[in-house]
Length: 177
Image (tube, rainbow, N blue to C red):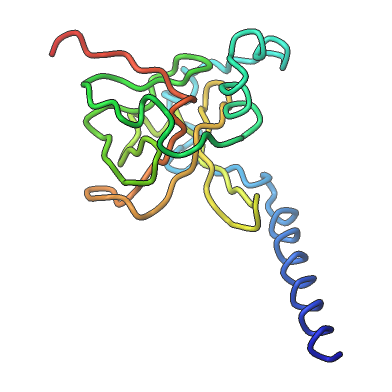
């Protein structure tokens, strides 16, 4: 009986700690890393604001579920995972240019992976407590689309791995190469 009570107590304590972390974060987990509010690049980006109905008209069901409801596409199923052409990866929802092909690498995880973003002002990193884990979500700064997550197990020079849902991106091939 004591063992059962100890297990129940530990589970309750873990849940309380996770909920407490979420509530104690004054900006609800929003961390705009490497972004200084006084820098002009931030102010140049106009927010794209649409109703859920407008997003549903513009996006496929899968695109909507991933970008607006924070779902995840199945690994190794996205067409951009296998893309090795030179060009720019943009947000599927608003067209903001986010990643360059030169920074893409095969992490073997099943989603397009990048070791750097085009511009730190174009993405937002936010704490994500879903599924009993603590991760860092990546959002488009222009339209708040869920893109994926960022991890600190990437290659040099940054050591970062932006693990991005293929369906949240569009690709424009570089016409000069």
